[in-house]
Image (cartoon, rainbow, N blue to C red; front, side, top):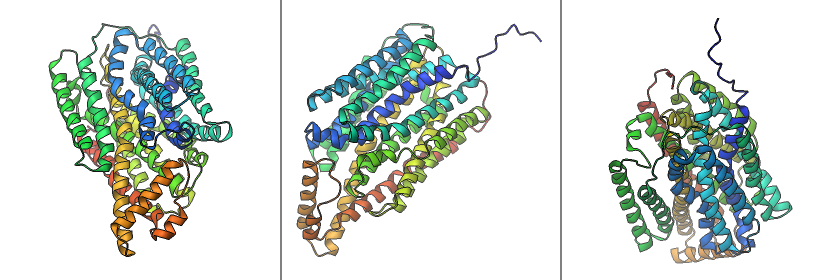
Length: 512
């Protein structure tokens, strides 16, 4: 038989490429995750104002969500590999400077800079994977890609907690540079620059509108905790809605949109994009709720909360590799549905079992199930979106996944906080009524508890003296609020799983 046609490289031969790009992609998840889990220690050390803690934790994520679409287009115009290198170097510099932060304003500035660098990393890493791996081998490569992320996302929270408890919070900011330099070495050695077919202008107006819509939406949801009638709430939400409408109009009229509306004529692409938003919404919201519930009600130290992500990490990695193989053999449809149902299972498990005395193994199982569902769904989302990218637009199209994903990551904590506070208030008001306390007396007790905790970030548990004085069982009230929150949010991945079942074709894959 003639062997004039070159054999495509094996998956094993492409392993350095896949690993280097996976390391880069993983930084964008690990960087905000370890910061959020250790925020109580950092905020106490730098005397961060209590009302600014949430913004500090989410600053980089908001910048990523607002900028990642522009980065995809820039990568197509100026080189995907070059853009990734710039992002990795920027991430390293921003984190090393963060480790030397003298105070809150400096650290906030570094988080914003880090967000820009991470947007560059996130916006092009998947596009480079598409350009570096043959289409027939891409599902397997995506499985390995997500498995690397799985292992690192399972290990780094516990490493971060150990560093903070052992040598101090400043050492936490060395984790991202370590991953970035490893990725940089592999990228420069093994990843080739895909040809730049044409230079594209960046839709600055479109990027600005989507950034404004997202920022005001998150701010409006956060302000809604204080009441929907407050100007800060309804003005922000109105501005977000108007900016969103103007963005849609702009993208339909401009010849080179940052987000091509034609892509959303495909039902699989639309479901996949929404899947990226929902799974990141669930993961970010769950991690926030886990941190609050673990430290406030279960009185767990930060290092223990980080360890919740570690058990079963290798099992998840193996399942994600299997998911990549199944996508290649069948379609992304069953894998996406299975992943979304895993997210539903994780939320329902928390809704059914959460209590101030719940066994730690149940909390580990809920965390494991949520992480498994999100990573399996991510593999299906990535393949569906990458397969829609035409030559020369890999960056612009592949950046849709992180754009929707980071939007969900930014919205998750804000919505979870809103729901948690809403249901918590409902629970302690019912508690007060049953104990014969007035709403004013109960509110005074709860406000005193919150003030005491705000003055001492990271202090676990409620003040027992306050509980004896008020008669309220705030631990159970908070837990019941969490259970209701998890029950409500479980409807999102369930609804999307139904949409995937109905809208994504069942036919076998054709070569893409």
